[in-house]
Image 1 (tube, helix red, strand yellow):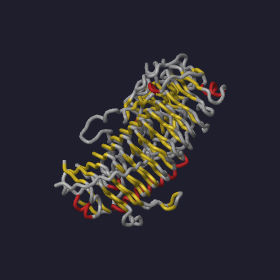
Image 2 (tube, helix red, strand yellow):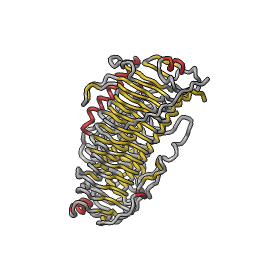
Image 3 (cartoon, rainbow, N blue to C red):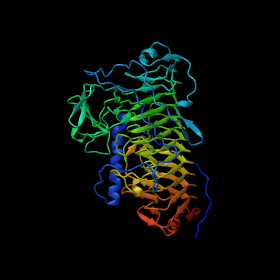
Image 4 (cartoon, rainbow, N blue to C red):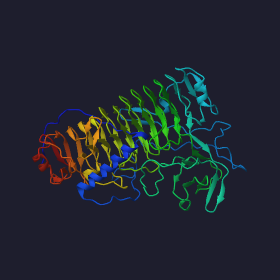
Amino acid sequence: MLFVGVIASAIAVVTVAYPVVSHQKNAANAGKSRTTDRDAAAGTGILPSSRPTWKPTRPGTTTPPPGTVTSKPPTVAPTTTPSKPADPTSKPTSPEPPEPTKTVVVPGNSTAGPAYAGPCTGVAIKPGQNAQSVVNAHPAGTTFCFTAGLHRITSTIRPKADQTIASDDRAVLTGSVPLTSWARSGATWVTRGALPAAYGKAGQCEDNTANICSLREQVYLGGAHLTRVASLAAVKAGTFYADYAANAIYVGSDPAGQAVEMAKTSTAIESNQPGVTVRGLTIEHFASAAQAGALVSGPGWTVKANEVRWNKSVGLMLVKANGARIERNLVHHNGQLGLGQYNSLQANVTSNVISQNNTDGFWIADWESGGMKSTRSSGTVSGNLIQANKGVGMWADVADDGRVISGNKIVANAADGIRFEISRNGTIENNTITGNGFGTGRGSGTSLWDGGGINVNTSSNVTVRNNVVSGNVNGISIQSRTRGDGPWGKYLLRAVKVTGNTVQMTGGTQATGMVQNSGAEVPAGQLVFSGNRYQLDRLAAQRFARFGTKLTAEGWRAAGHDTSGTFVTS
């Protein structure tokens, strides 16, 4: 049996983004509201708190989708063990060769990474020089070219207006320092003297008992990222423990003959000066606090063809960066989030690869972890490859206004592919969204309350158009929750149009539809599904839901949805 209708051609786009430290309270409240609403509506109890077993693969596969970035941090020359502790801020005596950067093809046949930065002609900065001192000595508009090798950045580079910070020689900027003078201590090895004084934690972790995700000093052994554990007793091979009271770092693998590094400097490049260009750099091992970036863009910046990897929190952050252009960067394996945007209007994020972020265990289902997040911002997110992140692929949350998400490939992220939450005037169009939402950590689930390929949550004037949505935990989830007030009044689910999409739902509990909690009722006519094409396992399967009622394809049409849509079986 086949229902056939006319496919509408309307267009829309939505953005995914992320707030900075000043938004932390809002993020926490948003997460609590989401959980409370779902529990109130569904009558569920306490959410599971076990650590996730999610792997970034689609159901039925054993490897990540094509294009996954798998590069490791650069392996530096082995460090010999001296008779006394070395100064952790000392500079290397010779350049350390970086690992060659990777090139990845993104949607639209574009390419990303330092190999596409172009030539650099200007003032040379060599390994061992103090980069900020060199920048300070030259006027606005100067171009600086980092030469080949490993550059240890001990203080943030703060460029002047219209300066260019670049490299055409595969230069690596690192925020880490060598750890030496290791001694055997039972089944572990210990070094002392490199840690700062103890400080408060920030952020929400997947493991909210140990709650160690936001501690900033990450450790790398032989080029490999070690997993932080919460106690000395838990140390084993591949892990480390930082005892701030004793100023001691313990590792569970023998460091003899291997370089051991600790992330220390918080940020590589940051300035509020306009018109800066950053291109061709590899930026790694910076120890930013939760919700802060290793590379922070300002207004009118161009950030192009960089590789931003293995940093502690956010890889690339936009803060009050109106009109910024973020293009063709590789942003991967960062501890919390690949890319964040806060209070930045008309900033465009184009042709980047944002992959495998949230390496350090931030809360997958409902905090600022994963691919990209924005708040109080606008602009276009287009032509990006966003995949295998442990969190939401693209997330617009808290007063985004006029966000367009268009032509992206969003694959195998642990939470929603796209989440558009308590925002307005969004367009989500022409995206391919597959294999998202199969995380199994706390707060993850399979109902429409938990999201799907596309999740529109308590937002207004949103168009979801001409997307391909397949193999996700759910198809398209429209949620109305009680979320309080924003800058333009009460957050409400209103004027949402879903049209011309292809939605595949052929297994598990996959569904498309809408849910609402008490006090967040939606007036008739505010949610329109029209001209969509659905691929189903059976026409009699209840793959649709309308405010708590499960429906077949016939029931969905009888309720007034997709009366001109197409329903096929595969």
